[in-house]
Length: 432
Image 1: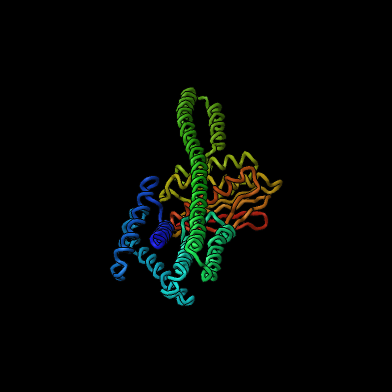
Image 2: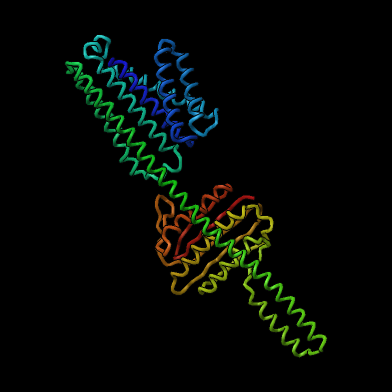
């Protein structure tokens, strides 16, 4: 009975390690009951081939790889080919752990006779030690190749978390050093329960932490989406206002032409000249100072140009014909709105020199977007990335830049961020 419970618990740990390993390389297809059913099928399948095919090594490995491939393909959003390759890798990890068990047993001279004498506690502890080492290896793989949400855990936090499996490895190793003094079945069972309990608690803690991290990642994505939607809404409202203004001006121009015709018919040339000069002066005050032959770009740049001008910020720009721009409108809005919002906000903190230099050109099969602005605060970096700035909207600044970077990566572009001599520089190159 003890052997059966021991083997079932060991297989359960292997199943959880398999689930964690595969989830490193893809998102879960289903949640709730379906997820639980998938895990239970994996566990029962592993129990089945472990007992029925224990004497057929090659066939057992083929069946194991097939089970991992099919069930994890159903569980994770990956291709069947990738699932098959990962199944081979995980089966290789299991074989490596089996070989480790053999080496440790040889080292401790765990013969069948001694195993019988000590109620097999030595072999059970060695097996548990191998499983916790397997779990530790899976965690390391998850840290190196895991999803972006896992990257929210800093290296220091990972080191503190990995203390638990390392402690368990040390604890089970200590148990192995004293298993020879076990005299009763109760003592052997107690040691096994303690060792398995520590491993089980470690797995539970990992999944709890993972759920918290993924929830924070989802909240972060929602925040990015809200900021992006806010910027897009502002720009589209500006486009709508510009369109309404254009319709109003068209109506006014018709009235002005009628007035000019009337003055010509009455031959009141002096009044006509005065009236034309007045109209010409109003045309020079038109807000659409920037024209790139792209409606969306024009709307964003002219809106931000007016905003900067109203705040006493010098806005120097260089643009060319962007009529054939292949970047999606919503992505253009996100990039320009975030960069120019940050630049205007930064210049507002300056007491004297308030300058924004902006470049948006298409040349040599490249789209180049560059913003350089003065600032008077501290840029906060974390792990080589901008976290935030000491401005009125601290959170939005850091999140906005990450949102811009995400779009740059979407188009296989590259970027450079620098701050020097109280000037902040953000340059983007996107291939066309």
